[in-house]
Image (tube, rainbow, N blue to C red):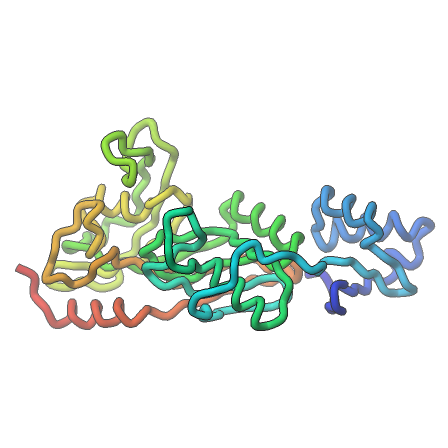
Length: 303
């Protein structure tokens, strides 16, 4: 935990107490405190100090952590559903069929455009910085950093696999309860640039599986990623003989046209707050189309 802190315009105001106030060199002590207690990376600390963006005023330590930034994306699209927000982080729901950011081939606004619109509507001059991504047709929560400190710390947490992501998926066939972990490396498919495949020469990939509910010829599973390979859940479940319903790219059958995209949703996101150190848990309810799928599976018998 960092102790009390309050945003005042572009500045974050902190009360480090005697650790800084009583030091022989308050400026040096302030830098040390920001590094050890706040966890501010050295590169950012030096840049802020060199630019006059760290100031001492009596008991108060002020850091210019919130300078105005360009969004980086044109505001537009449907306003996002906000699941969590404060001065440091934003988590929004990404619907299936919406890209996280532009890749040059889209005609419609992406989630990044929608987040820019959200910032613009609230009068926030914040760069749109996503910490992780979801496939275009996977729904769920996406985490954004709202300042440079948050971005650096969350990026580091992501690289250390300290951001927890839990998914729910509806897959073909009845999954045996004994299938609890899939540990199989994933690489590119040489025959289809859109696909990935389990390959001995691929990158390590581990997915944990929990059977939640079984149906006539389908299963609801909860999945936790220990690694974050492209299409990891889709590849691993197909490899296990249980492709996601609707995921034709990875071998799903057209079962009564239940869904026209993979039945995969990020239901929970967990991370340590980059400023307070608190554990944040964000839940994202099932989208309507997946709730309807679930209801149909409870009533239907596949043939």
